Length: 137
Image 1 (cartoon, rainbow, N blue to C red):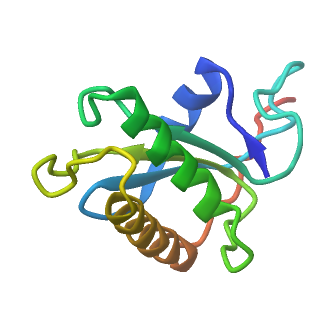
Image 2 (cartoon, one colour; image 1 turned 45 degrees about the vertical axis):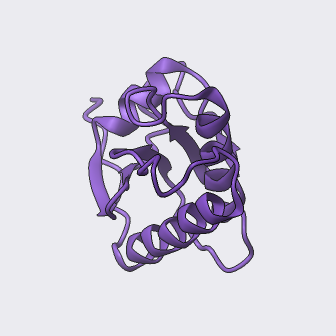
């Protein structure tokens, strides 16, 4: 599994379809188009994954980092089968700070992990869109 690194990669995936949602997360997917230009955004035909945890929804850096670690750990688990495409898991709502007082509590990690597993299970049921044919003469 490859990780998204550049702004252009994230923008390309976020412009794609939202394939699954839960209460706090959304999963965006973009088909890989390796032959479209001389310098493709995605260098290999593999599963690509990025995590977006905006400061708006997770104010403390320790919380954002803990959520990102959970995203990458759950997606790399042996039972998860994401199709060969580029994916971004985006936090779209904040976790209640009254319920989850500590940013790195086991309770928060368990809640995030359970919701991510639900998100990826929903995404596995959604088929990946085929890459768009290039229109080169």
